[in-house]
Length: 141
Image (cartoon, rainbow, N blue to C red; front, side, top):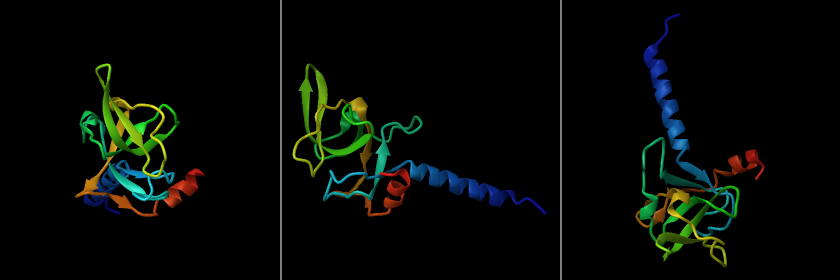
């Protein structure tokens, strides 16, 4: 049996592409951003630091951007929208809120807490509906 190195290389390249793509997909676990996206949807994100590659600068996010950040009040990353940017004692702080929530998130957010930004195409968020339910089920969420 002869080893086909081209075939092995092609499978390795496909695997690398799939792994990179998977790192840029985020499953929505709550309804806090309805109707922009729903629990079980998957959003496409760009990362503030992807193995040393800076796909966006967290200091350049704007009101209206949907970001994924490490919240002080929750033990998992949160996907919510920036609704205001303010200066507190010389530091830029972000007010962030889920579209479906009555109030903003309980604490201001610093740029270094923002890890990802949901990709937009035109004015639309890039969302893949419903296929994240399998991941939620497997994780018991």
